[in-house]
Length: 139
Image (cartoon, rainbow, N blue to C red; front, side, top):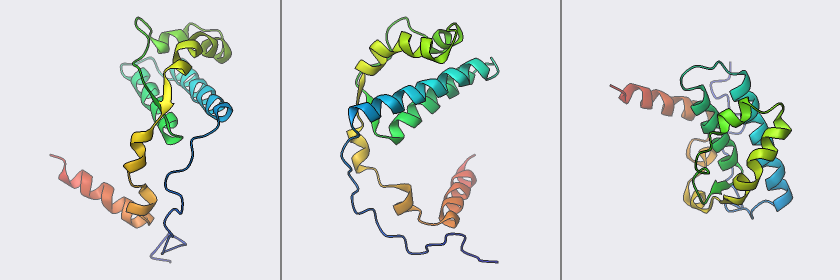
């Protein structure tokens, strides 16, 4: 067996670490897809304590992965999980939250200074070792 599961042991650094922001139409499509994922998560996940919080975390993570952040907090008196649960379909949910949700988006420029995982931990082995070190340090 191959002791190094990474087929490329010497990955090249990203030649363009700060890509240009995505076009608005692509950002809109990704945002709608992330909201659709959130809709299905909160509607079909078990309604137990914390399931909506995981949905919010995934929504935030998906958007940050494509460089979308927010300039404002969620609209006052809005609970997106209940908006999703009470909406008949994802399109109705997206239509309900889109006016304030889309207006609050901004480029996640603060991520420009964060090193990529591929550069910091280039092999699968490095990533597993980092997780093991983290778990070993927990009380």
